[in-house]
Structures are given as C-alpha cells and as structure tokens.
Length: 269
DNA sequence: AAATTCTCCTGAAGGC
DNA sequence: TGCCTTCAGGAGAATT
Image (cartoon, rainbow, N blue to C red; front, side, top):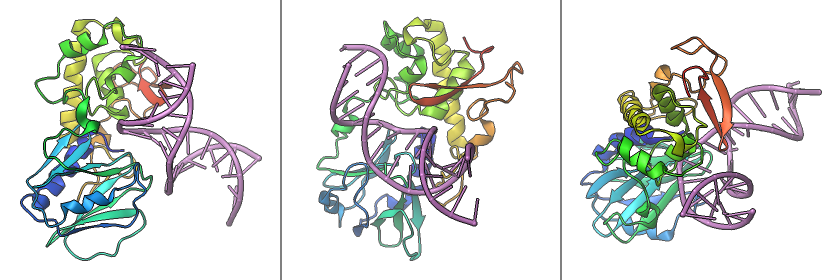
C-alpha cells in the first residue's frame, strides 16, 4: 500500500522518462477510479512535461498548460514500459510518450487521475495539506502546537494529512514505537519533548524506507516492477504475537481509528 | 470545531 | 474442492 516512501520511489522511477518529453496521448481504458477520470486529461496531449513533483502522496506532472494530478490510492502502481506490452487486468490507463509508456495498474481502483488548468500547485485537494515530513517546516514544535486540546489518538493525529502529510498506517505504527509513545494516547497529552522525538522518528523511518525503495507487503512494485525492501526493517508492523526487539514482550495488535495498529505495551506509554 | 463513520473496490485469507 | 464471509486500507465526504 503506497505511503510516502513508495510514492517517492515511484516518482524517482518515472521522472527521467517524463522530464522534457512530450505526452503523445493518454489511453484511458477504465475511467472508474476513485473519481471518474475527466475527459480534460486529454489536454495534456502534445504538451511538454515541465516537471514531475510529489506533494504528499500526490504525483504532479506539470505541463505547459496545466497539470496532471495522480494518486496511487492503496493498490496502485506505475510501470515504465519501453516496448509494446499488451495491457493486462487492472491496467487502467497509459500515459504514452514517444519512446516509452507509463502504465497505471490498480486492482482496487482507489487511485486518482485528474486535470488542473494551472501549474501553480493550487489544486483544491492540495490546499489544506500540512508540511512535508522531510522538510524544514516539520518539527516536534509543529506537532505539539497542532495537538493542543486534541483528544483523538495520537496515531490518528499523525495520519491526518492536515497535520503532516505522508504518514500512513505502516509508518505511523513504526514511528510511534521508535518514539516510545502508545498509539492510543490522546494527542493533546504528549509533551513537546516527546513530540520532538516523534518528529525525528517519522523523518528517520521515512528516509530509511525511501533508501530501501519502499515497503512491499503484498504487491507494491516500483516503476521497474521490483519490490521495496523496507519490510525487512519493520519493527512492529505486522509482528503481532512476536517478541518486541527491545524488551521481548509480545507485540500487540489493536484497531485504532479503523486501522490496525501494532505496538509494545512495555516500551510504549 | 472536532471526532467518528461511511464510502469507493478487489483479492487474499479463513471458515465450514 | 469450493463457496461464502470477512477484512484490509487512502483519504475525502458525510454525519454526529
């Protein structure tokens, strides 16, 4: 399931094939994604790619006359094809370039492909997003300030894209474990010092996951079809019933805010 | 305003 | 062996 490291890995894979190239056409075979793929995406045709960027888990392909906005949802992936390959099941659209094709596959169809008549990054979907976790704008002080009087579980708090973007279910569990904070603790009842530790843990786990090419649990693949290797470094996610690496206690699993959460009762308070 | 619930969808896994 | 049920999950929308 793509979180920030998986999107970043994908972005790095497709960027060299898109930069400065002209989009020949976009073949949409299945427009029923999270929102219907608008006919306006065809405005990208014959336009030269100015830049390919990531904001949160969105990929922005900026052209001369607007931008394509793409999201992998929870089961989406992009592949770069350099020869003709017949589309398979769940291959919903292709972005066709002169010498290569970017193909989108998404079994669950929670992905997104939209068009924006602007290159200024002001899409409504991006308007209220919080800071990038790997940027200078993100800090323990930021989390602490935003958490004042908030009673929801801290795990839900750090997964809220208005607070900080890109922290999905896996890395939320991981970073809270690293910071020694119980995932169900009320967000407003965490000290500044502990938020500083958490901010550091979030940065660290995301940066390491990017280095490993993301986390492949079931089906994530990068733009060449290869898996990511960060699953090997997961400390708590998916380890319910196994021993905590720090203290040997049994790792617990509990649903918090409709999402599976993994933690050590002994190490996390 | 904040918190919770609902929704989209398919494939994997579990039960009998 | 096979059918049926349950669950997972990103994140905006709807609801309380």
